[in-house]
Image (tube, rainbow, N blue to C red; front, side):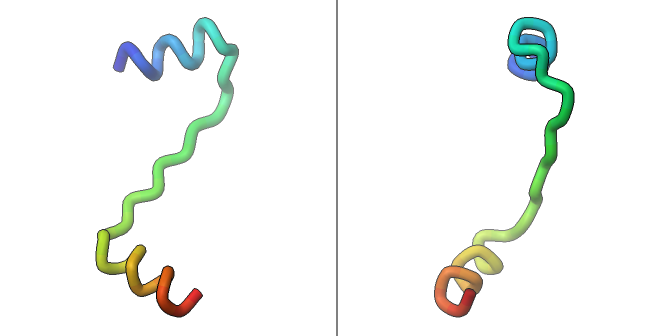
Length: 33
């Protein structure tokens, strides 16, 4: 949470996106984009 707070307060960040995918999905995408 400290990292997020710093991002928003110090660096004036206004958007953050989380991508949650499995390792297997990433490896498959690397093989066949």
